[in-house]
Structures are given as structure tokens and as C-alpha cells.
Length: 288
Image 1 (tube, one colour):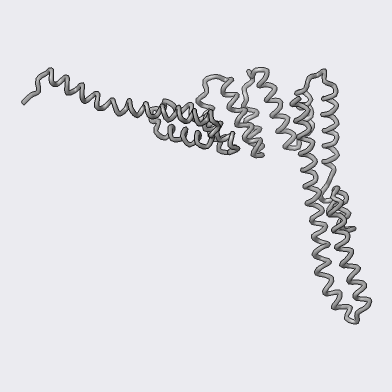
Image 2: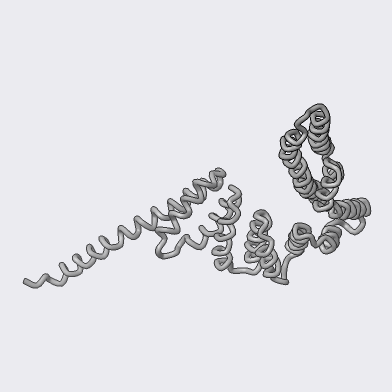
């Protein structure tokens, strides 16, 4: 039997309400989840916040909150030093930004991620991707990142000009300090691991002394010299001199070869250590 028209209206109204209420409740729950993620972020629970933002993205079919979540997740990952994954989320966040200024901020963050992971090739790409219409503070940041990138990739002349441009032109003391640090860095570049290895081949321990590692230099000299001395004295007082020679050679070879190979490693490590010290001092000068 046909349903009367007033009853048809009520049935349709109830059907509409039944279909709409779950959607309204779900939207409310999704917003509550997003707000909860924001609260976790404010409390510096970055792992919890990132996981909650990911949950919002997964269930946000209408993309009401998704665009805001990408940058928030990236910031959480950056704060927890997960720089590689942070760079991926900054890439997603970049396309959600509406102004050049906000896009530049995302590029700066990506650039920082690549520098911190020593991914200098991608860092340079991001550096060149920065727009021209930057604010004064953003221009300074661009110069700073360029200086860091060029120093890290052994382009010291470019880095020197950029570090100098970061200080006040009237601060002659800071400028002189930067010039002295780059002069020191030039001396560090002269420290050659191959030279250290060759010197230790000529005289055990000499390569370590050249690299500035006195302790290992003495160890190498005394160990190798001690083996030779022991072999010679034992051979003089023994009838089986050939046997003494056979016994001595493997030990001599082990410490002699190990010594000159280690000299090259020590020289390389000393270069990195001294250069890192110069780099940190440069950062101190420009941050004042």
C-alpha cells in the first residue's frame, strides 16, 4: 500500500539524519584527534604527535586536516633528528604552502635536513631552488647555508667570502678572526695522509709525528724498533739464526705495515678533527 505523502517526508528526513549523523560524529572525532596531536606537539611529545598526525592523514578522506599535518609531522621528525624522513614530509608540505615566503621557509628546512645528513648534492639543489624575492632575514639565512655548504664541500674561497659577508662590515675584529681561521684551515689542507704513510715507511712512527700524534708515533717506533733489536740480539747469540729470522719477520711485518697504514688513517682523522674545530669557531664568530 503506498505511503501517504506526509509519512514519505518523515521517512526521508529520518533516512537523511541517519546517514548524516555518523559523518558528523566522524568529522568531530577527526578534529579531536587533530587537536590532540597539536596538544602533544605543544608538550614536546614529538613521537606521539607525529604518530597521531599520521592517523589523521590516514582517515582524512576529505583532506580537511591533511595539508596541515605534513609540515607538523616534518617538524616533529626534525625535532627528533630523523632528518631524512623529515625532508620527505617537507617536500609534501611545500606544495601546500600558499605564499613564496612560506615556501621558502620549507625549502630552508629541507636544506638544513640535507646538510645535517651530509647530502650535499641535494642541499645545493634546494639552495638554488630558493626564490629571489626573499626577506632580509631569509637572504642572510641563504648566505649562511651557502657558507656551510661550500665549507663542507671544500670550496673554501667561496665559503670565506660568505662567512665574511655575514658579519657587520664595521666589525674588523670578527673579520680578522675569520681570515685567521681560513688561513689555519689552509694549513690543515696541507696535511697529507700519503706523506704520513711514506714517512712511516722510511722510519716507523715518523708519519704519526708528522700528523701530530706523538703517542702513537712513539708506540710505532718502539714496537718496530724493539722487534728488530730483539731479532738482532737473539740471532747473535743463537746458532739457529735463520729460525730467529723466520720468527721475527711476521711480527716485524705486522707492526711495520700496520704502523705506516695507521699513519695515513691518523693523518686523515687529524685533518677532520682540526677542520671541525675551525668550522665550529667560524660558527661562533658569525653567531655573535
